[in-house]
Length: 472
Image (cartoon, rainbow, N blue to C red; front, side):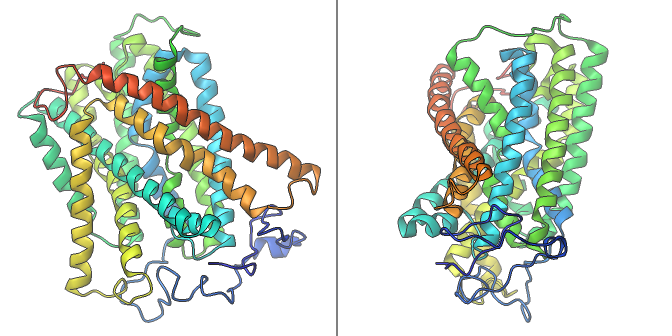
């Protein structure tokens, strides 16, 4: 485990185990901040996931900050953005817009805190490593188990969306289970590269894809105007339906679980804040524009995913263009999940840096097993909003909001009342933890209610039925 030698933050909030992290940097020091190698084995020794890459055949720490930013955008702006117009229909435009902006600001801060924790403990590659820093072996198993479950559930949601897309494009050309299997196989193939830098080039295609698809959707609903033209400022809703909408917003910001892995493959980890601000700036702007415009013209009957709100022809075109983001955003989550298992099995060995058939074969087996589990989840929970709500309540509530508060409190232990600024930030991070707990509790209730209700529908588990309009 790391020691007090890890004392590096982006600013004056980086405290480790009660010790200040040299908060009086001058301007030059701030601009040239470097992580000084620690004397402990956790920094760049055998516990580092990638070790010394000087003579490695496969090099992992090669990404620029903008490449990390594009991967984060591709991971985040995919399924989440497609559910937001229905959130406005469920809550009303004013509460929904406030929540999208407010939760986006908080997500920016919590993402920044993850970067502080990573610089303080450079050996941390995933949530399991962070759990071990704070709570030893028990923390490692709890955090690691939650991370892999969350990522596999997200992978399942992408397979589900792939089957919805195929049913839409082919007018339900065959059994939905077959489409799910096709989606699984495509995702397996694209998950085979072992480094994130290679995946980052796919991420650019993913962003262009989703941007084009939502533009077609917005233009389509603007021309066709399928809604009544009425925009509700607020909407009366019960607890279950209302909180299901909130959890869909949370899912739209649910990329934090992979941030440690992204930072680990940055060439310069100190540049990570640029990637976070790029991500969140694009996130919040696109979410607001797409949600408001689509809801304005599609009305209260807007579908989730929102691509289904246009005419049959435009719907097929939009879904066809969205194929790259449906696949690639899932592949990014699948890559992070597979990398977690791979690092866990072979950390401290030279197997990860080899180009041998055995090394690649083991990676391929891990990818195959995880995507198969994700396919089972997609078939078991076949309604898009229900699956998003369950994922958000169980995992995104903690990984995006609650745990970042815990990270900050751990880094700043003993300094909570050292200044007015610290007292304020202590309150903010306690609030983040409480927010995660509230979202988890109420979200589980609302998603459980919805899943129970939809389980008896014609689109039940492992069904061949057309699911392209299951969330209308």
